[in-house]
Amino acid sequence: MEGKKPTNAKVFLDSAAFAESVPTHAHWSEIADAISSQLDSALLGDVTVPDAMKAACDTINPILAEK
Image 1 (cartoon, helix red, strand yellow):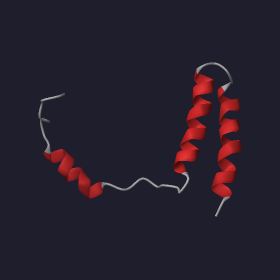
Image 2 (cartoon, rainbow, N blue to C red):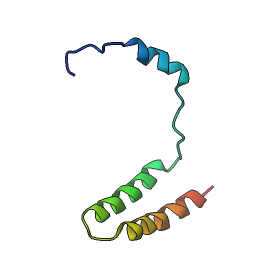
Image 3 (cartoon, rainbow, N blue to C red):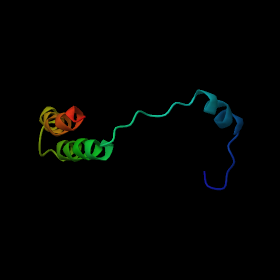
């Protein structure tokens, strides 16, 4: 779409009234990295998806438990 204007740019301005911020966590980058690395392993066939998600949870749960 480079160099092309949207057919109706007003829709973007109108939608701003309904926008909400995404919830964040102080350690989101660690959480995202844990999920991403485990999903990569599953996609490569190194581990099953359930095993990958369990490993991700094992890493993430202690992070979420921190106060």
